[in-house]
Image (cartoon, rainbow, N blue to C red):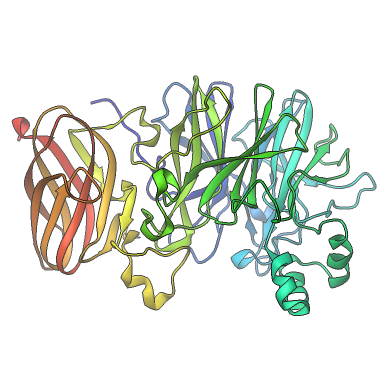
Length: 505
């Protein structure tokens, strides 16, 4: 069997969020923030860069830490210790420039800092601090909110994008000075006077673009908003820009990819110009599949939360890179990817999240698979958005880790776990699940989410330690999903599964 790649495509103990994929030479590089396994806040670890040969996206490697937060003069171990979502571009001098923002625990201070820049001679080498993006007078560029930078070398013109946008305008109408003084000014790190002054010209929030000089850190133009920050009569409907700027140019069209205020989705807007007239295009991916084929928030496929990523083309195939949540937390996010299609009219249909991602097709019907590559994990009712309260966490199944084991925990009555897709080449299989817990019941095994296409049943009688439980399944040949719906009492954990044709049993 050829080597396969799953979602998440990096090792299960690696947590790269906010991924920016770029092809440099003959390799695909993934730049992103670095979460900690079962972390306490966003982006707790220093930057690493994973990459794979463009002709083999199953083989991802990294060369260790490429840049440390303590290299930035703004670093403060107590107040400003973390680096948020980065992007990298190759300058006209051939070197690679890393753009990012510093922040504190839970993002505190992240909206009040300038954009920092580091430089390296290779995409995944050791970066050195260069300075802050600044105006021509040398002062740090602080016009608008400097957050989630993205950058592109547009035929020699270096364009920087950044920004964030909250619905303070609507809130301020209802709560007036309380929002302005207590919430807005404190969160954004700006004075009330500055916010009021900026409000006359549309405020300090929004999606922003500026051209940089050849030194890669001096603003050559005045920053300008590329999308209206008003929610009134907007073509963006309820998919307004929130954060996570990313920019790509495809032929003569600019694609601005971003996280909407819904938070779980990556959307895009297009324009023939780099800094104006962007028109909303649609949703590319949601980490809860919300919007895909009419799916709503009430029956989303997973716990949802922040989503940030972008698109890239590898050997003629376009992919979207995004992240998923684990540990019932927004602080341990893992990189995933899906193939996408850009239609002749330039639109990108929303894609579903899968377990096979970069695999160039379905997974083999003969192999051992981690339970954690599930693309659907739901309690059969309503899954949360973001990190639920500690007292409520036992109500939701999730990918979890303990003592170097990565598994699905909190499986209880009506929990549904799904994997898309496998290529079944025969009809009869032996399926083995590695389970533990105190539980009595059974799994309905089906090829559809509603369990109407049942292909088997696996009885469960567990005490505590890991135990392999086997069942025979009978399915139609072809590409199918696998769904497991637990019916019974107690709670259990799911470590891995082994699928093999009966003829090899």
